[in-house]
Length: 259
Image (cartoon, rainbow, N blue to C red; front, side, top):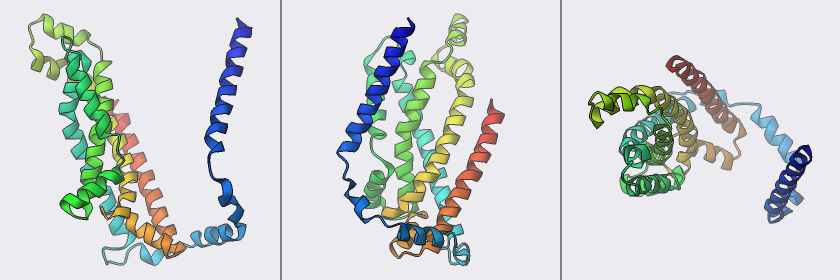
């Protein structure tokens, strides 16, 4: 028994090494020929000197204002995704359609399609529809999170404890009453935790949507990199790091309260 276990571990290790080699083999490593330690040292040195004057100057194009906009884009996008994913969850959950296996498959397929495309693709599409700006970014995050949250909500719905549901049915409750008195009380804390987690993810995503004109701090970051203004790059990156850290602490505290 122990010998078979060791053989399995060796086989898994060999498979892992093969996969790493296979993935790395086709990469173009010629870029390493132009690698310069001097350039890296210069960039790192300048990144250690943030341009503090750009943090807030009252122009509404400073880091503070753009970071607030980025958080707002993520919040609105997450709210859109949370609300609009719920109908798909009701369609995609197998335990709500025990007599019909086709409808849940259709719901899951729609959710798969919605989360297949990254936010940047959705942002480019919505910029053509509603024009450039924060609203396009919020819609991009919202549509993508319909797929992401819908999948996670569906999984929680399908693996929930059915005993309270059966108890409700035993006393004559209909489907709507069962949903409100047996399912939602179990799922609400889990769903709230998932929404908070995806709000954090949305902030990180919104930080890049400015690259295509969908608002937020991304455009400032890419322009600063292109202009090699490393001090400005540094203050933008510092703002993103601090914002994500603060949100992580805050949402973590809320998640503990919900348990």
